[in-house]
Amino acid sequence: MRLLESKDGRHSGLGILRAFSYSARVIGFLRFVGMLNAAVWFGGAVFFTLGAGLAPFSPEMKALLGPNNYPYFSGAIAQILIARYFHFQLVCGIVAVLHLLAEWLYLGKVPRKLQVGLLIGICAAGLFGGYWLQPKLKALHATKYALSTRPEVRQAAGRSFRVWHGVSQVVNLLLVGGLAGYLWRAANPSDPTRFVSALKFTTR
Image 1 (tube, rainbow, N blue to C red):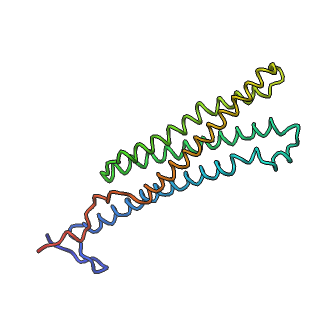
Image 2 (image 1 turned 30 degrees about the vertical axis):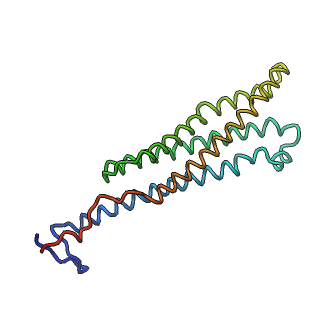
């Protein structure tokens, strides 16, 4: 194969170097998107679970709202924050799935079962929390503080709310752990790309 001298002194045969440079840029872009999404997703989960999610029930919030308003409005504020957090998780999950498909289609990199299973588990936990667990907590919260509800019903709703709120916290902690693993996988890909270096295209 005839080799052509490029401007920087490197050899390219029939545009091989130029094609390889384009491929390398796409590979770098895909890796950057995957890393950025994983880092933002993990950071957001940590911030919400250990910070923003606990703020409505903090002593500062109680002092701000006052004893009469604190129990109800703090829970209502928490429901609003949880809804925004669910939308955040949904967007990150969609980006992660699209990134996995892009790596598969463009790089020919078949996703490993562990990586796919981890992503499915994280997305499933997020959907469970957003579409089932949080609406249930919202309904129990409304029943717990409804003045027209009988006292025994409100007490039962309060007990159920505490139980399901604990389940919600456990799910969030599991999500944080799963996202830590997902971030580690994104930062340390196990399979090298299938593109061959242009330096191997030489003549004898």
